[in-house]
Length: 161
Image 1 (cartoon, one colour):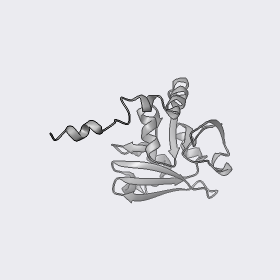
Image 2: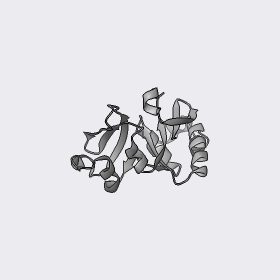
Image 3: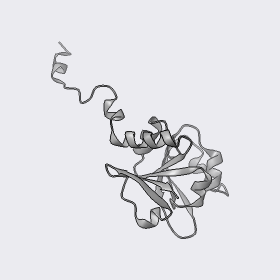
Image 4: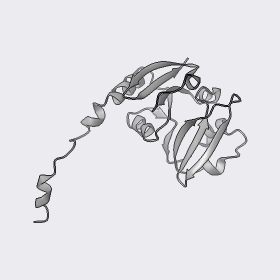
């Protein structure tokens, strides 16, 4: 008697077809097939990083169960912000361009921090980041050293020149 009301429920989706047939998934998977060792980073919405990881992509942003301390040494040479990133966390990247290649870290919650930096920073190149997914239309200054690879459903994928 308790489950009778559930008969009226119409499932929104069945299986993983909405994920695997998503245009963004198809596009990033195709790029990853051609360049599987390239690193990625997402600027914008934090959920997109985990979407890329689920597609098998090496994405620097998103959930990190163990902190990427060696990589963070490239971003934070003096280790001044290790109290922010030395933890399990969700990592989100945001643009910060000031002309001197600065990196700022902001702790937003106990398991969530933001890295603010120039997407064209040579530091990201040192980390092997080759592809950038912007969850918004980036300004020209943000992608001055990149070429557009694809734009799919308000997501813009760029590649470092």
